[in-house]
Image: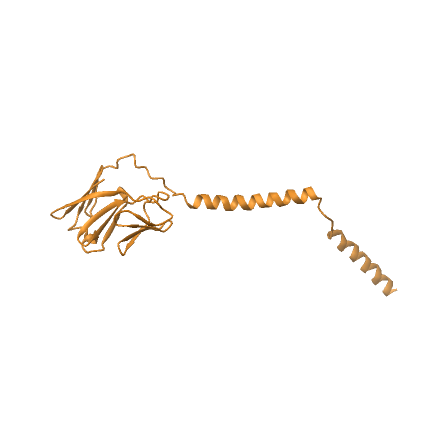
Length: 178
């Protein structure tokens, strides 16, 4: 009697278990549809990430002239002219010293006592506020393009040079004309 009751319980358990386990096969058209839908979702996700990774979050607008600004750091920007008070802005005092003037989108460096100035708008994707300078090389840290102090692209992805601006020193004032 116990064996029969146990057998009935086991049979009932197997039936209940099989209710949740179903097997079968997908039709060929359904399988192809699911494969294509999955592939499209993956490509869509990666494609969006790829195309947005090379786009600057802020598009530079070189058509407008920024307002004249003077700051306590000794830098004055007025239209296409930038003046740097070298007595206040001591980062340019030594050879190899450099500045990124974000409001004017300009890079400035002291190369053996001569000042160079270039646009800080990278020719690859328009980044203008992510730069490093060492060994007389400017590196756009958005995508690691490297430029020499004459603006020439030395390493890509950028292939075009940076625009170079004229510089002049009078007393303790460095003037940059864009």
